[in-house]
Image (cartoon, rainbow, N blue to C red; front, side, top):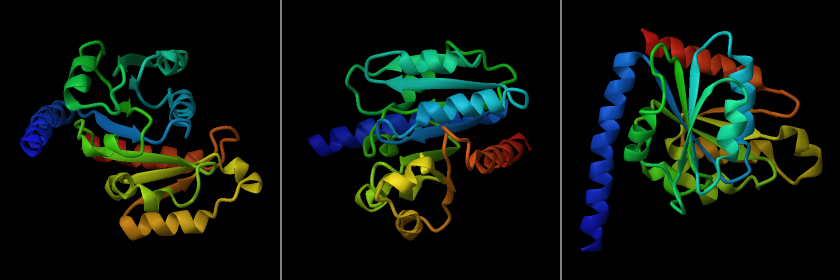
Length: 218
């Protein structure tokens, strides 16, 4: 039956996710699952973060994309390790994909692993990939009602970045309305307003990363 098949797929994914969590725990690696719609700015955020924090942390990226390696090449240009997963039409990453991608990375001394999920506001939230935290990006060009329309991703995320705030004078986006939707779904969510273009707000994101990394290392 279809319901049983779906349940079996999710259970198999969750078993592998637990193996990944154990591996990350043993090595003290902070693993973050970055999710958003296409074009919200995940890769731009990674480029800034990897460049700005290169002196503090050893970081790597698993890049999920439908077809190309464009984003992985952008990330690798910062000097960080990057490995590409092409899902060939698949709308999300799963634990088996991440486990396979790890074989191509040097995990020795790694502090933070970013998993850039496929651009999609629905499916990526349904699959645990062994992460410590889910982080969602929403650009101000997308509309402030997206958290209300796609609640699961924001409900499960520990942090959310409202990106491209430099465009606020030119778009119809109410920051407080968007934040209100998020907090109604998840009262504990941490929200940052940022611009990867102007660097506005990025220091708050970096401080969150430092605290998460320190907590993981204990």
